[in-house]
Amino acid sequence: MGRRREIPKEIHSRILTTIQPSLDGTPAAPAAVGRPDSALITSSSTTWSASTLINMLEAGHARSKEATILNMIEWMGASEWYDTELQQAEKAPPRTKRGTLRKRLATIVLDNYLKEAILNTRRKRLNKIFHRGRTLRKLVQLTHLGILFDPNIWRFAKASKEEVEKTAACFQADLQKMELLSILDEQVRLLAEEGRLDLSRFLDSLESRSIAPSREISSLRAEYGFEKEPVPQSCLDTAIDRVIEGVSHVLGKHPLGENDSVIVNGAVELSGGVFDRLRSREWLNCWDIAAALEMTDRPVFVHLGVSVPLHRKNANGEVTPISNPFCRWRKEVNSYMRRDMNDLERPQVFICPLNINANHFTLLEINEQTKMIYHYDSMATHGIIHRKTKSTLVRRVIEAEFKDLGFGYTEAPTPQQKDGWSCGLMVIRNAKQRMNGLSVGAWNSEVDPDRVIKEVIGNCEMFLGSVALQPQPLSKKRKKTVEGVQRNVPDSVRSSKRLRKDA
Image (spheres, rainbow, N blue to C red):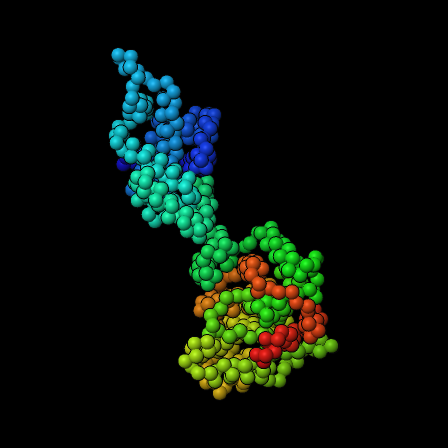
């Protein structure tokens, strides 16, 4: 016992495969034994020899003093094997010297195999393991395999039959808890088959099934660096197709065109063309960004504005600065700041996208709580990143139009995009982080735009499940805007009634 004796990692996968029928409520069918030197990997756990099972249990005990998940899988496999042996013994029970049938078959079976294994292992300890394995199998049958992750699983494994049924009933009464256990099933199988967990996949599952708040998921993704992990194209295509089908159902039209739209929360129009742009990884226009942000949860003290263009492009393609670009939005901000500070619904954080040079989106945050104005640019120059550039166009315009607020200004550290099209997605992602009070990250943080696409599509799916998406013919002003955007000329025209009212 002093020397560590490891077992092949494929063992746990084989055990789960073998005992799965019994976990589903049907007896396991014995599998054929493979070659002697590979029986652990190729055969069913119910056909392994006692030496095999006991060596496995000894190795598991040496790995950890605690009941780890892998140990518990071993216990469930061992108890399945032991119960199968008992069933076989009951069919032809041995007799005593006087010719009467023996009654204590469990003791006889165990003693025979202890001799076979030639191990100095106490019967009491093995019986305890078999009992716990049997208890765990019952608990998994009544709930999900994911229950092995429960912090109290060690206590559950020692429980009586009545306590197990009571525990299972508590889980069954909580649908969300059962949903969580079903998500954890996949993690148990990953641990058994590959010896690892996949936290990124786990977070995706929590978000897709709306088990955890979006804010918490975003925080965890940023903390563990999952935002830089790529999303399989097939996964994106499936999600986009599902949303297109849902929107088509709302509109009663298929296929969707650029001029087909639904209105989000009665506020912003979402055009059918946005899904092709997301799939093709094309530059998003100001209305695509506005619709995506409208579908993002935010606290009541955060006010969200539509994109403010700092430049315009004429018919000859010449880009010129716009005079007083924040004039309209400044009036909007002032109207809220004049409200009573005791008004619980009074916004204190104001966020809006900016459009620079008619071809790039950034994000602006005016934070009354910190008395600061933050600018988040995913294509910042080397001078801005290294604090060598003191004056920028955005800073000059902000200081001119918001000088009387007395707030400080900073080019906030922002993850940098590696392409020329994902600035709109970065604005959506950064706005979501800030609306939830989270940092957007550092200059060298990595964000995969496909992950943002996946979140946008996920929000669309959630809205499709409610009445928040309603059919809406594209307004004439919006059609004009779309035509301008297609010529790479973003416009600040507001098409929805609520946005015109806010202006």
